[in-house]
Length: 240
Image 1 (tube, one colour):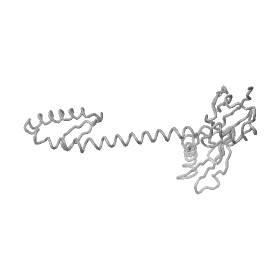
Image 2 (tube, rainbow, N blue to C red):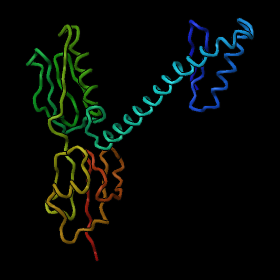
Image 3 (cartoon, rainbow, N blue to C red):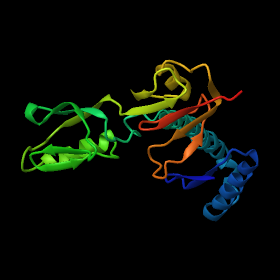
Image 4 (cartoon, rainbow, N blue to C red):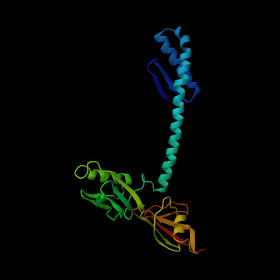
């Protein structure tokens, strides 16, 4: 329940989606009027009450509906981005990623097709920037902060992905090996990239080892499961 106050008329309205709550508005208004002007003023103030009920309450209800729709839309978009893991907002850089760094007006400070080493370090005149596990936006800010002051007055930096670090697929596929990651990659897509399944491959016996899992645990995964950069997919052989 949200409070709405009109200062000029000293009217307090309660926005609610339940019709029963409108009675509370009437009671509050009646009590307020009785304290301020006496009961006889209530009848002449009734049109004013109705006016504020429609002018004050309905916009808040419309605002609430709009916010609800925006919230659902935002949640849907966020879910899609997280699932793909390729959004500049959510994607975390790692060793093997190839990026482009543009420092506007300073070509000698820019980097084209720079592949992040295992250390994740990028060298600049002000020192090192460790890009591992950073988002694109975080890396841009880190470079700008390092350049600002002693090197540039107002640096503008843009970082873009050129090539994602690879995923790995082995076992019963035609061409096992490492392949560049693609947004929204699934096991089915990974198998297709690797030339398809061999004759003895089992679609019911596929495992993935996540790059982020330090224990390298093998998780069972189906053909529609998502594969992320650095993951290793293994297709087992069928014995039947």
